[in-house]
Image 1: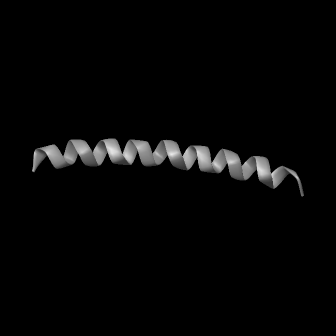
Image 2: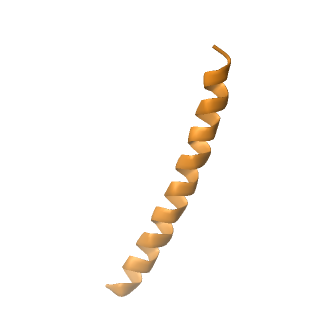
Length: 33
């Protein structure tokens, strides 16, 4: 059961990247309003 740890870390990294993209998108969208 050691592999899920590495998988979870990878998922967190991917989620962090997605959140950064969403935040950047919201900032751009916010400047339109």
